[in-house]
Amino acid sequence: MLTHVDGAQWTTAMPLADVLAEVLEGSDEGLLLVDPEGVIRFASPTALRHLDLRTNSVGTPIAECHGDYRLARMLTGAARTEQVIEAHWSTADRELSVRARRVPRPGAGVLLWVRDETRMRHLEKMRRDFISNVSHELRTPLAAMRVMTETLEAGALNDGPAAQEFVHRIGLEVEQMSQMVEELLELSALEGEQRPVPDEPVPIVDLLIAVDRLRPLIEDKEINLVFDVPAGTPPIRGDVTHLQHVLRNLVHNAVKFTPNGGTITIAAAEVDGEVELRCIDTGVGIRSDDLARIFERFWKADSSRRRDGEGSGLGLAIVRHVVAAHNGAIRAESEVGRGTTFVVLLPAWEAPAGASA
Ligand SMILES: Nc1ncnc2c1ncn2[C@@H]1O[C@H](COP(=O)(O)OP(=O)(O)OP(=O)(O)O)[C@@H](O)[C@H]1O
Ligand SMILES: [Mg+2]
Image (cartoon, rainbow, N blue to C red; front, side, top):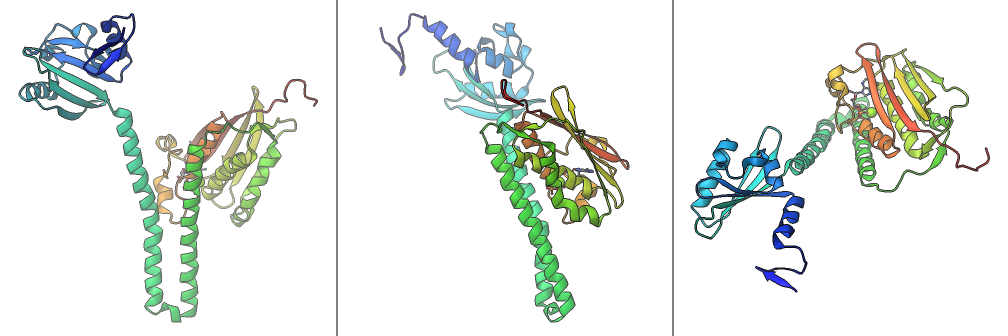
């Protein structure tokens, strides 16, 4: 038999009350009914959770179990009107969205719908921060380029050596902005990527090749580059291009933050069926309260922020993504003034059973 009530219809042997109980149990939105005397008459499990109410709150006045004045105000407000009243509250650990409406039946009271929007608000904040970070990172090079073009227009164009210097610096700013756009595109591609990590054996030597591109920088700063990879270290299971990128990012940072004449060691070892890669530098180090933040997008230590044209703080965010996509883990250890070590754990490649060595 098909039954209808106010537009809903159902055909099941289950009593309506049981169906409703199931629906309320599974709903993200909590439901609370408070009678005209302020006594809680009904509370779904989700409502109890969102409002931090005890499970035995039903039958007691709401003022006794929930002290928030905003809730009391909403209830009295809703009792006086036919309209739905809406509000957003922040509590110590939550962002709630609450709607209240008087039940159009004498003496029934007010119904409250409560939704936990903490996660959504957090995502909205991240999106706003992201846009403001991108704009901020673009504003600095753009402002520099504006000043330089204005100076050129104002006459420096006719001063050969000065003109050359300005054009060179404009080129550097353009380079810096292009790199940031590249990194942003890469990050967004990685974040949107759903495909599983390719199951290829990646020998460590194939990764070390990635560091070659940094040789001019390394030689320029007279940095000693040491490789410590014992024979017999197994290959990593993953994607060679992405893994090369990880190592290049880490070594590039090590070069940037290590003074002239320092040492950078790239070590690999097998640890419990995993490959542990280490990038060890003798550089400026990272303060311990900064260590927790280095993998955030756009995060830079204050000291590196002050240096112009030195990256946009996206490198390690990309590294973290790639490592996570490989089911690996990354951490950093550092001591200010002594140096930093990045430790990356990645799954070792095992030959499929039955394959010849
Ligand atoms: N080896 C290191 N030694 C000291 N500080 C480091 C090191 N690696 C990273 N950091 C700190 O972490 C910050 C974030 O690094 P990340 O690679 O994400 O950004 P970046 O190098 O500043 O810019 P990008 O990589 O986008 O060019 C750096 O700005 C720096 O403050
Ligand atoms: Mg970097």
